[in-house]
Amino acid sequence: QVQLVESGGGLVQPGGSLKLSCVASGFAFRDSSMSWYRQAPGKEREFVAAIGNFGISLRHADSVRGRFTISRDNKKNTVYLQMNTLKSEDTAVYYCTPGWVVSTGSWGQGTLVTVSS
Image (cartoon, rainbow, N blue to C red):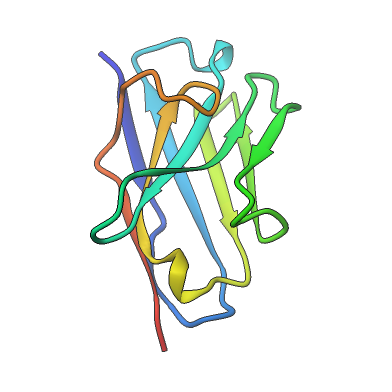
């Protein structure tokens, strides 16, 4: 059974930073690409970033490129999202999911990021 547990969200001021973590289990993590998505209030879930299984291939959405960085640690079955220079429009629930850009359909409970002064 696929399990994904996101953490690291919270309240941060504009311009601040947060690092999200997602611990995965129940599937071959080291053989899987992973992605981060987010869903803002009243909006559809959207792609944020993806990382290949070796951690070499990366893709970031235009809206976060240069500010967010996805990474992974295969020894810890964990994928990360370092978020810098946060903006109010980054406020959302953030989810990790197996898959390269397109989710395989498994989701965690998400972690809420609120950017506000």
